[in-house]
Length: 408
Ligand code: C5P
Image (cartoon, rainbow, N blue to C red; front, side, top):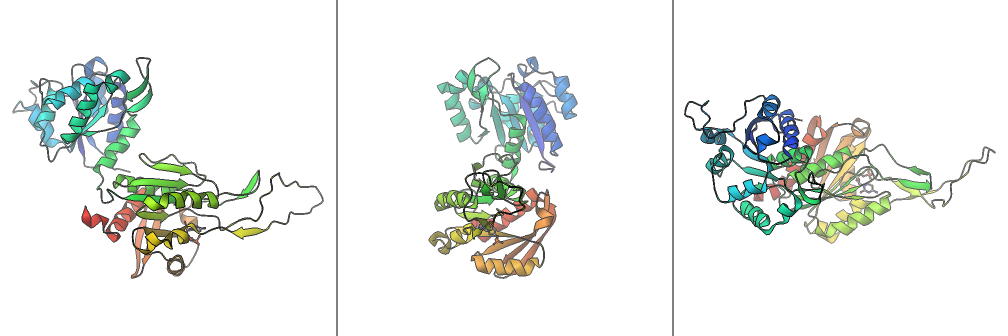
């Protein structure tokens, strides 16, 4: 993906051991398509050299208000006018205090002060010792900076370079990258709560065997990520998959269809949108054996019998909140043939306003997919693309359908 293509980011480094992570962050931003201009304070240059940052960013670093390389000799104006965002990572406690008071006694604080407030956002990744982070002065500064319009990212928790353990570490470079990407995404689902099921379910036959399917969960996880980046609070109910949780998403792991139903029903009352991407097993063993069913060598096969699993989507689609329009339900259909006919029939049967069809063998485990959206008016195709791109388009489409996009 090139999620930051066309974005020019001023990456400001202030004094802190987390400067080593800024080097990696710089690379990650560029890999995602951004151009990066590094500006360093004197304190930052005690932790990492400008040569390192120049080599990684491909641009000479600015570190002085008196830099004369620009004809007008006004780096604080020029740098802040060219940026799509200023990202201070790491941002020390001292630098936050400085920003708060509108001081400008070094180039970085000066250009933050000189930035056009409405067009150049200020993103802050704090990094400091846990006592410094918890200090009332720092917490007051964070609150005030947010009120002044800055985006202050979370801090990490864990072992600190000083040997103590607690809150205040700078987030890892990949986490910050995710937060920056999310920041630039439109927010049509702000204020919404989205509930998503994803992955397969596993229905035990005995303690070591079961029925499952080839769903990887990638489409559902991409939708969770896209919905979260679109501003929603997202709960993801995931069957057994090998995927990491998208940043900011609250995840509940389940195994069987019954578990998935319980978790989904529990979280449905707060949801405004429900998207069922899970490939729920249609049947489960009528009575899972408590002990492993043994092969006795006689050639006899066990007599397995099955019962149908509850239909999670249909259950939610028939709930009073869905019927009243308070919960918008979206279903998926993974088919091997006659996609349109099956998707239409499934939409009717499940009683949902929108059913998204895809070809099972062409999507399971893949990073790309193609979608067919079926609603009461007909169908529209979303051409083959990465699952994240499709997820963003589908989320934007759902936002329009629910009127969420229009309101924001
Ligand atoms: O009936 P079928 O499995 O083809 O329907 C697919 C859609 O219904 C998907 O959205 C899937 O997540 C949902 N579903 C469900 N519970 C089931 C079976 C399917 O929520 N037991």
